[in-house]
Amino acid sequence: MVNVVDKDLVSIQEVRNLLNDATEAQKELATFSQEKIDNICKAMMAAAYDNRIKLAKMANEETGFGIWQDKVVKNSFASKAVWDSIKDMKTVGVVKDDTVNKVTDIAVPVGVVAGIIPSTNPTSTVIYKALISIKAGNSIVFSPHPTALKCIKETVDIIRNAAVREGCPAGAISVMTKPTMQGTAELMKHDMTKLILATGGSAMVKSAYSSGTPAIGVGPGNGPAFIEKTANISKAVKHIMDSKTFDNGTICASEQSVVVEEASRQAVVEEFKKQNAYFLTKDEAQILEKFIMRANGTMNPQIVGKSIEAISKLTGLTFPQGTRVLIAEEERVGMKVPYSREKLAPILAFYTTKTWQEACELCIEILTNEGAGHTMVIHTEDENIVREFGLRKPVSRLLVNTPGTLGGIGASTNINPALTLGCGAVGGSSTSDNISPENLFNVRRVAYGMRELDELRGEDINLVENSSTACSVSTPTATSASKDDLINKIVEAVLEKL
Image (cartoon, rainbow, N blue to C red; front, side, top):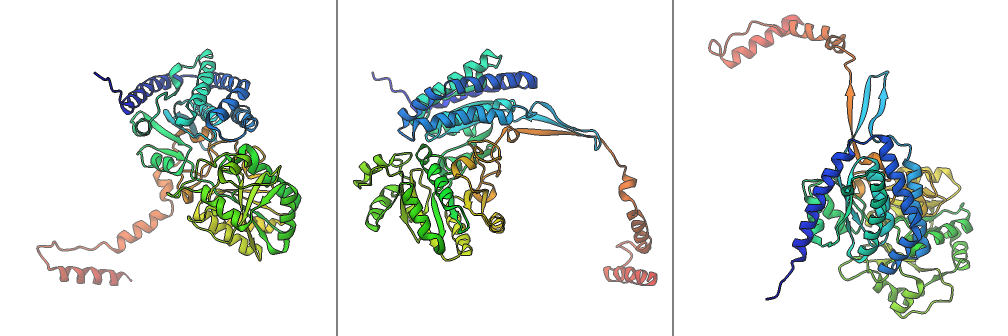
């Protein structure tokens, strides 16, 4: 007799067990002082940082995405840079005490967090989400992308062991080892899960928001980069090239298209070529675009995080030695126009407009088509144009004179260092923040009474009394007069007072 194992049932049961342990662990975490929580997080950070190279290599080998040296930088950012930004943050007990207005804010952990982890940034995202969750007094259960299971599990083991040595309950940080779609659905929908941190494709984020559990999700990025004619062109192109080649473009804040004005077009094209970008011919562009999107309109995983060499082998196209980024000139925008969409690979669309006003409208069109609420970049020396873009663009991060990848996550800018970037209401997200521990606890407010009802009424009490006197009449009951008679008597009484 063949013993058939139902993988979905096994996965669902594992999730329930992990949630039980996480719930009990979180109850214990909720009793810890700020100092103890911080010591645990510091140990987690140090362990992740010490293993940043090992984990980067594992992620690259297992998924085939990106560049392991760049993944080292991401692991360092997710551990050390994130910790440096949150280490002094008050997240336990009283976080604010306003003695003047007599209002006290008390941090209340949300409970058990479900951490959905993508294959593009697996180890760094685990480190980051674990740090901000534990810092806020929550436990976290990870749902790993199946193609990155080994490196995700190793990351969880490393940071959990470090946390446990500092007194953290073991169940506070855990990971599904038998991930299935049904198991992940159970994790997101279960009553014990109090919040979902969803990073992944559009379908996964939509599923998180449809689960019935509060969620913070990240939609697709599709940020254009506008090089305005006053920009330092050489520096702007360098920023874009550095950003688009970083880990082969796997961070969703990376630039997806370049927009220029006719006046500076030639100079920009020459600078891109100088920095080893290759402009595709029309025939080459038509061949490559067939590999960018699948028939169902989703991004083709065969190009995600791949090098120019890998793209060459996949498409049969030949590019000059040393090519860093492929650029296709484009005029169209739409869901069926691959170059106008998100491409997590070293591939860019290139648009030309007559004026910066036309560029502004084109950027809005690109973002509205895909990537609304996420990120875009502008390179310019004109502060007035920056202001106009800031007022009108449907993004949560408008980055100025910086690489999109590094600026969006807060590495080259002074916004919160984060690997989960909210897209706001316009992007279907619950927040526009770079997610930090402050997004992962509720606030209980203790507020003292400061005013009495008589004070609140103030001068309005005289108006109320005068109005009552003016309208006070002796009205017959409904049984002694008809409705018309009653109305007439009220009108007459009011008129007499005028």
